[in-house]
Length: 404
Ligand code: ADP
Ligand code: MG
Image 1 (tube, rainbow, N blue to C red):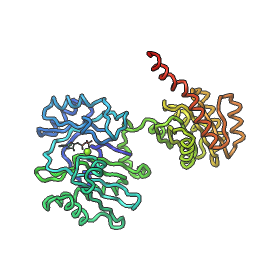
Image 2: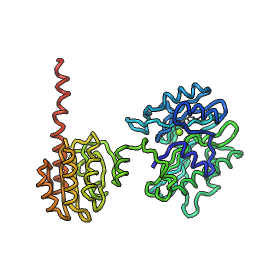
Image 3: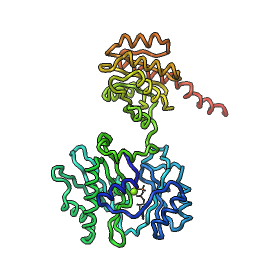
Image 4: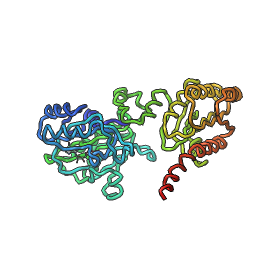
């Protein structure tokens, strides 16, 4: 789970990471009012979205007057911001953070990630702050400093000092740098984060070390241990399909293709997606309906998959052990009876109560395409999808020919 910059700054501050004074606002008027409360004579208005690269996309504006702040906010609120991290659809701006502008002497990159291959927390730093890490890695790989943390002893002060000196920091600011890095590490560890990124971490002209940006991602499987973090979830920033799935207790990941998948078990769901690709199609989603799925749950899963307008065909692939094919069939029939699908539906059932399940599909009189093996099911789905989109694919070609 991702959180906003202002939330990450607040959390990190509790661990000793300093940042400039700032406040959250939900309207241009509130932003102006908040800046008056903050004091000072220069501020930064920052769009709060779950993505980096806002500066280049107009989501970070420096302002010196009340009216500049309101104007900057009016340009942001309600708009969608598109950065290289949002995807082409962008992310909506519904909150802004106003922060006192600070005079910057140098910008650094500081990131903590979970390195799965070494099974350790990895610290990644660079004196090329402000740029995205991918850019730094491509243009100045020599500037990147890496240090992994031995889990049994944790991050040590001497390691932080070493990193600081490698970044070129001078002795008078090393202690503040150690405090910032230690704070990030403790927050990472204590809150079950998978990523903490401060870009840029700056040295100010009055020689303070401050986090000007902050990003944190948390391990979803550990959120039950941190209710105060779970509460920070902002659904407006997430894929609406995935939110709906999470609310229904389904494990769903939206993808770019057009073949909807309804499967039981994560492994079988992965194999189904592979087989669809092998047959020449593109899966529209990963979906695991779990074990012991009731007809109601299956119907909900079906409606969720169908709510994606890119879906042109659906493949239901069930290998029932704990599940029951008759319940799955009931669910599919229930969903299709309530809301007849305009796209071909292929169902492959195997395992517990398979005969009963097939009979339910047969007796329903619905135009469901039945398959026995996964290979056959994938091939039938891809064929049905190709047949169903053919007329639309040829239509524009004819239009182009007409003027000639
Ligand atoms: P993003 O990474 O999404 O582009 P940042 O929060 O990193 O957004 O802001 C972009 C740039 O704006 C920073 O690299 C920094 O130069 C500048 N900036 C951000 N906050 C402040 C601030 N409080 N004072 C001065 N400059 C700032
Ligand atoms: Mg940044």
